[in-house]
Image (spheres, helix red, strand yellow):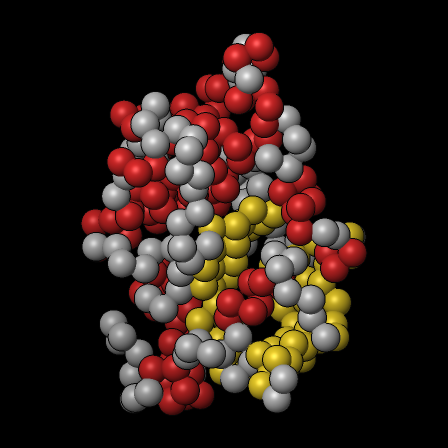
Length: 256
């Protein structure tokens, strides 16, 4: 993909004698959603951690547009246009829900003091309006002044997604964001994700729920033991014999 926003070329990562990623290459275009699936231990989270600069690969290249992503420290990711929703909620319990979402606008630049210091007068009107809009879209407007302790698991995940979307990222990384959700909660979370797609934000989404991948992603990458065994549109991946054997462990994928 010549105009890829994110490009990995020959990425390898080993932990002692175990290979987590073996010569993995992929490309994600602006506004595209890539789903990543595979059995436990297949390298999915390691892949996201390499892109998220939490893990240094042993070999390979990672580029964001024309920039060498591996030369960028993790603390500069948000400024470069990459945000992430982790497997476990990571909101600050000492801040309000509003402040947690607003930190998505200022954390990378050191300007969050504007938010936390009354002397600064709060957020500029445009940023204040954006935070309120994100809270409303996430169904959290009524909880803006409270702390995350008052939120359910689903609401915590929605608040984290709102914070990740606050700076209008070019690339959003999501690691099993809907684990433990009901069907209604999953559908509501997907609606927020679709609004991110409308804003031309590219997504890399790890999920065990294949139906959610089908509903939310343009392409699917399948990993097994650190190796790429399939990649393509969801319908093609669903029917791939290697995927059926390795990932689904049977003759057909769920929902077929």
